[in-house]
Amino acid sequence: MRDASALTRGAEAFLSQHPGVSLVALGSGAHAESLDLAPLGLPVRYLPAERNLELAQQYLLLNQLAFGGIGVPRWVLSDLYLLPGAIGLLRCPARMVRPEVRERLGLADEDPTIGAAYYAAPSVTPGLFIGVSLLSFLPGTGAAPWVKVLTLAMLRARRLRGVAQWDNPSVRIHSRLGPLRLVGRVPGGHEYGERTFVYESDVSDGARVAEAMERRVPLPPTRRVAVTDLPALSGLLDRAEAGEVLHLVAPGLDAGHVLVREGEPG
Image (cartoon, rainbow, N blue to C red; front, top):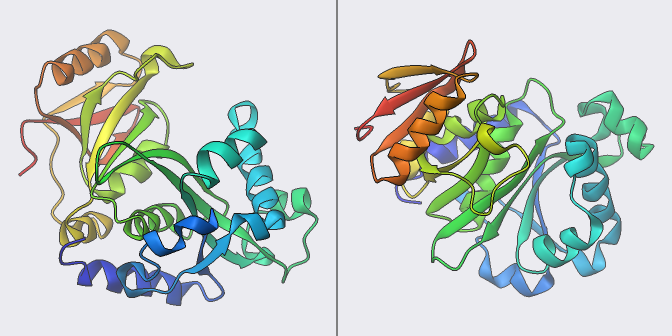
């Protein structure tokens, strides 16, 4: 990322506010040399998934706990997460996570566990990654956007495309990294159909990401659209697919409406 000094200070502040949290990467051993294992100047411990089966199993269980019926199957974790890429993890003592996590995994308070995790898949377009899975069990810490930022820096991502639902609170987290440009509908369709859209984030400029993370220079929306107004939301995607520049701006979702800015965000 260009000019990431402010972002580094924010990441350092996050870690200092939450002692015991550390950044770990889990992936195929073949990828260790391809990653930035000091993203934003912060150390990452790389753990080859071939030799850390217990941690891989823990991630699998937590992903399924977070997402229920659409949680990642074991073969997908191996073939499509760990073999081609790496998962960014925030590890911490179990006492810091939600009680259901400790109960699900049978952990004592000081046992290490995964507090938050993010996986973005590599794509055939250089510098572009596809957001797949973000989870956090560290309530009230702001861990979700930070594990996303740090993982993308580790991957040397410049652009990110992801899938979200208009009415999903995750839109708030995704918009913490900056305006979400609307791309269009999900290729091949989606289980949630008309509620779903593809967005793109530009993460190449660390200073602009830092401004967004700190909620500086907010961009006012030009339009508010109810998440229940499916025809209007479909119309936004029609416009985006036709080449019009449309963004969701922070906080992305407010009182049952998505916040849309028409034209370049400035």
